[in-house]
Image 1 (tube, rainbow, N blue to C red):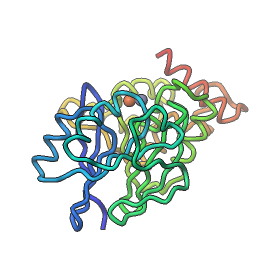
Image 2 (cartoon, rainbow, N blue to C red):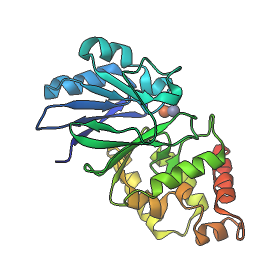
Image 3 (cartoon, rainbow, N blue to C red):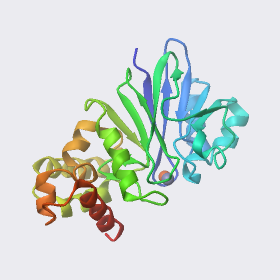
Image 4 (cartoon, rainbow, N blue to C red):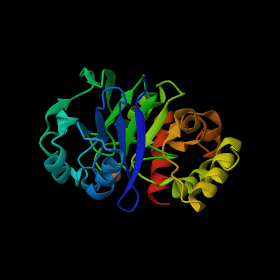
Length: 255
Ligand code: ZN
Ligand code: FE
């Protein structure tokens, strides 16, 4: 049975996510940006906290961990490669590590680029992937540590997942990502429609995360560096997809 997944706005523009198995009562949290809103949501629902899954070491994804650990004593799951700079981990994982949550298989996908130790959590039965600052709604994370080649490879791993899953990314950056995406593909009708929806949602204070992977594939410029129309729109026919991705990322950094 699919998990119940709850989006929790934290800090200025971060998202944390609760996942809960109604049968067993097991509850997990993906990333820990801010204790108060997470605690409020758990209290309101009468849930404990059994696991915290960390995507990467940036402070805005781990800051609340100490406080939550004292209250709920969860098992903390994070990347083995970054164990030296993550909070203490009960479970250190890497790609291929068998991990399950409430009897649901959780696949660890290494997605370096934003940081070198960034991981994503893919839950096939719940049709969900938690990507934080790797693949984002209509964007991708900035390359603080990794190379464009690494991020391109990471995004391709995520793009290869079943397209009917939902992408749970780490920030509400979609509006500004939309403004940028339109500079790359102004004539993409799927993008135009999505941007109109984003405007409406943000005006109503509604989150644009999660987003369907299928929609990212048809509109997210960072996933579309290999598409002929995109190469042409950028004047980069004949360049390979990785070069096109590198140029899109560069333009976004200067946007
Ligand atoms: Zn980050
Ligand atoms: Fe972040």
